Amino acid sequence: MTEKKKEENSDQDCYPVETKNKEGSVCVITERCKGCEFCIDFCPVGALEQSEETTEKGYHPPKMTEGCVLCGKCEKICPEFAIHIEEKGEEKESIEEDDEDEERGDWI
Image (cartoon, rainbow, N blue to C red; front, side, top):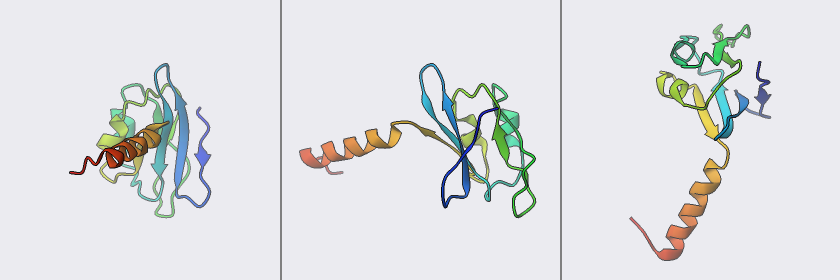
């Protein structure tokens, strides 16, 4: 099973994932999760399962097992927006693009 990384002062559990072409994390905002299991059912590689942990509301959020390919289907299917993918380097690229636009004067 993939080890989760609890961020300090955060209500989300993040699971680091490294594939052949990508590196990132699958993050579950546990207090948003209603335990519907859509993410588990729609994962094409079966990388998610229901955890034994219980939220304050009594729901069981998903946890990562093995084999995640960072496809993002879990993120897209979640009706509560409780799960998201953070690809490593994603934020840095968007910040660099913003700086370039500002320097060139490309304002929309």
